[in-house]
Length: 312
Image (tube, rainbow, N blue to C red; front, side, top):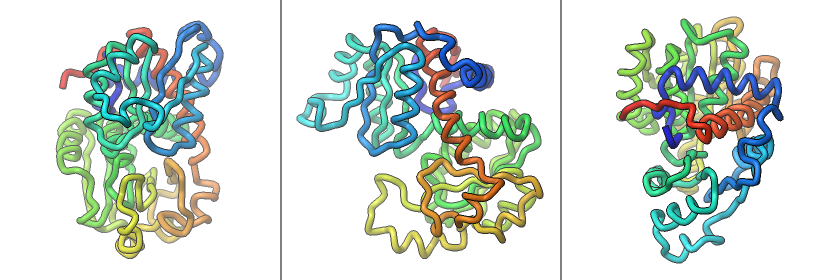
């Protein structure tokens, strides 16, 4: 396996190996300082970032490497050079590439043309690095995955897609609740349902958030307007998504020991109220920290050729 572009690039064994490796790096963050020594990791960021940028920078440094961050205005991509030519050249300079951009197809094209490992650090379709951190956080706090019920409430987006894929592989029962016009991609849901069946779990969708969260062990939400969504839709989206706000009343419908998760950044008063995200059941700080550990594990495993990958 050369690239990590979506969660379904992994086998279940790959996924478990990455989570175990992440826990090991959390315990000994400087335990492999020579993996990227004297190497750079090319980091192309076409979108603003806090957690993704800093966590990757830290992960690369802990492996002994240097992160080279660039945006579209700093490359010839902005003047018409092809994605393929860029990937070919960067492969001669760097040991790996981390791409955060809009169109998922651009990352796919870059990976096909590159001879180095390529990591999708977020596109409009998938956020697979976030899903790794989410799984590690759930495992830390719930002890495992089998039998868990996770409710994702809000707008069907890249975070929802990757979360559903990750849950499907690990046997978590997922209920996605969104307005019909903001439902997740049906192809992603269909493929995840097939994988979930093999793992003896179920992927469901409902328009009713109260049904979704009943007896849930984990309640997850994300911003109502993602990067790349037309800003003129903000007011209409807020009106549509008000019933999906995670507040104390919605949390009360979940299991007594349910936890709350959010990938951040959060807009308090929109998708979640302060009493929930800043309350004792919130795991958002652990999620954010785990981005660093899982990305360090991912880079280590990809550079070392430790992942088998799944035929697609």
